[in-house]
Amino acid sequence: MEAYNPDDQLASLKNWWKQYGNALIAGVIIGLLLLVGGTYWKQYKNKRAETASQIYENLLADLQQGKPDAVSAAATKLMQDYDTTPYAGKSALLLARLRFDAKDIAGARSQLEWAMNNATEVSVQHSARLRLARLLLDQGETEAVLALVQVKDTDGFVSEYEELKGDVLLAQGDRPGAHRAYQTAIEKAPRGSSYLQALTMKRDNLGPEPAP
Image 1 (cartoon, helix red, strand yellow):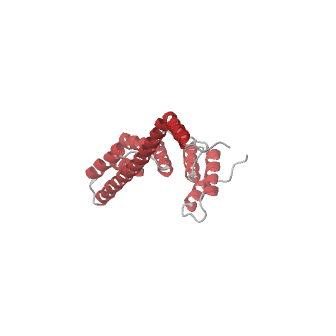
Image 2 (cartoon, helix red, strand yellow):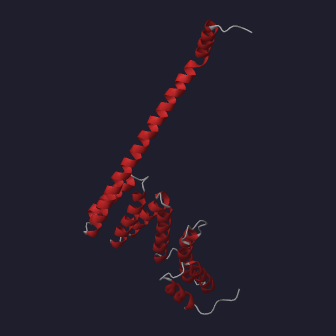
Image 3 (tube, one colour):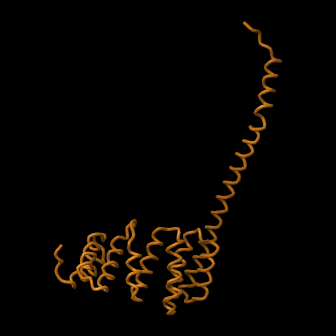
């Protein structure tokens, strides 16, 4: 049996360190940098979210107090500087409403398109798409509306999309298609919804269900 030799062990350790020491140190440093960087990034995102939240609260207060210029400035700031927060998309919807009320149809359309394409919340994206489609329908752009309502993932908005589809088909003179769309909207609407009566009236005003 070979005797234990501490010098051999030390030499072996030195060789190992010479071969792998630099890589080990580099790995430790990289790990620390990632840890510190991750913590900093999380704090940075939280701080931005808090700031955006405060700006949005002030925006809502200005909205209630009838200060459209202040609302517009705050909404624009959120969309430009805090576009990755959920408040940017919501602000675009509010700004679109202000533009619409001011008879600035092009401005309202621009804000809705921004929200549809940039909002971080899917529900806001759908709200923007539906409002934009309504706006275009009022302008007689039926083909553009049909393109907007062709959505695969409706995320709980299927009834709203089908109703809108029915409206545009009716505007194009396709009464059977509109009837079917309204029927689908009724079937997909939440039970007990207060809007079921309005949907039913739209469908019934078209007469009996068309033959398949």
